Amino acid sequence: MGLSNKRIIISSILKLIVIVSATIGVVLSAFAGIDAFMGGETVFMYFTIQSNILIALVCLVGVFLLLFNKTNKIWHIIKYASTVSITLTGFVFTFVLAPTMGSAAWTFANVLTHVVVPLASIIDFFIVGIVFSYKKIEILYVVIPPLLYSLYAGIGYILNWKFSSTTNYPYFFLNWGSKAGAIGFTNELPFMGVIWWILLLLCLLVGLGFLYLKILDLLKKKKHIE
Image (tube, rainbow, N blue to C red; front, side):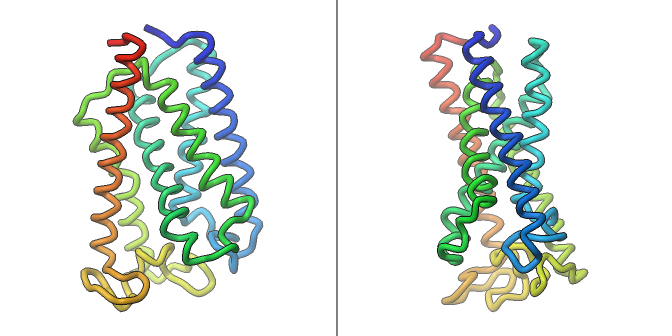
C-alpha cells in the first residue's frame, strides 16, 4: 500500500523544512567564526553538521521518490538510520551540551540544526515509514553513523586535528585527554571516560531505534496496514 495524497503532501513539506533548515543552519554555522561553538572552517568536522547534511540529502532524494511515486528499500533503511542519528544530535545538544553552555547555546543556527531539523525528520519518518516493513535486525544500522564518527573523532584526537581554535576533540565526552580518560570517572566534566559515553550513547541509539519501530507498528495497526 502506498502513501495517500495527504501523506505525500505532508511528507514533502516536512522534507523541504529539513532541507531548508539544515542548509541555513550549516551556512550560518560556517560563517559564525571558529571561536563559536561548531563554527568556522572546521564546522564540517562535527557530527551535528554531518548528520544535518546526511538527513538533508536523504530528504532531497525522498522528495524525488515522492514526485515519481517510487519506493526504495535502501532509502527507507538510510532514512531510518539518519533519523535516529539526527535525533541523537538534538537529544545530546539539548540535554548534555546546552546545559553546559547556558544561553549562548540557543543561537538561530543551533535551533535550526538541533531542534527544527530533528523534529521535522522524526515526524516525516513516521509519515513515510508506515508503508515500509522494517526487520528488527535493521535496528543495528542506527549505530553505524555514530560509531564511524567516534572512530573519526578518535583519529582526529590522535593526529591533533583542530576541531576548534583550542580543542583537538569535537565534544567534551569525546575528549580522550580529560581527567576521566578512556574508562575513568571524575566529579567534573566529562564525569566519565570516553568509552562509557560511547557505550551509553549506543544504548540510547538502539533504544531509540527500537522505540521508533514499535511506534510504527502501533501506527500500522491503527491504520490496518500490514
